View 1: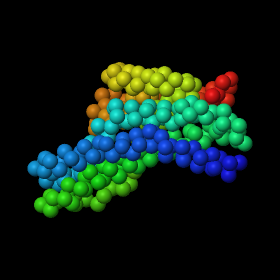
View 2: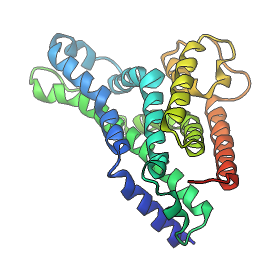
View 3: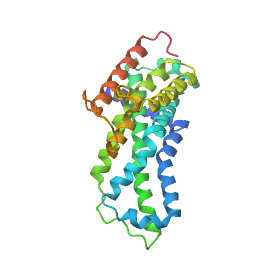
View 4: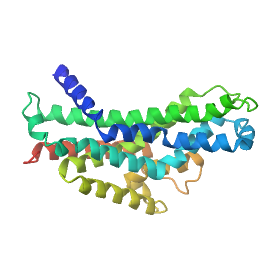
Length: 261
């Protein structure tokens, strides 16, 4: 069983190499770091004060997430997840997949695992990109002092991991929608609509009930700008609850769907 699942995941991962989702993740991971690199390479007068600030690297990463968390990351997840889940519909490959000697559970888990791995790749690339965006100007301009503090790998991983958890409900719900609708525009439109709606409700008292807002909420918490705190559950737990719930619902709907291709 484990061998079959591993082979299935490997097969699904190979499919992504020929897809737009792979390039979307690659470009998306380096997009904000690339802009920041170019911006600070041009405005070099600001670098001395910025690089000498306390906790430079943590503030630098949070600065990058400020640009990512509210809109770009949710939109990237919606697009990438929709593209991956729609590969079989686009290529009329569902019938071929379902004739292979693997259970429906294996098919579902393999595809879902690949989506989660792609999202993990996006976060790893973004973290690497943010490090390079902070280091390259100092390397290039000899008169700019490299940050004195030791690079906080633990804090870097912790912050990126937190945002990954916040993104899981979006991944799960978008995967569910993409499996249920053959038309790519239906799942994409629903995802975009939810992202836009989540931005509009950020000032709502019960915003923590809307899982698409969790990245933005976490960003505001890191900046100390969140005007209220949820007295129900820590937002990380809420994200995991939504993720598990959407995943189970997606699995059940996939197994019970009469027409799977």
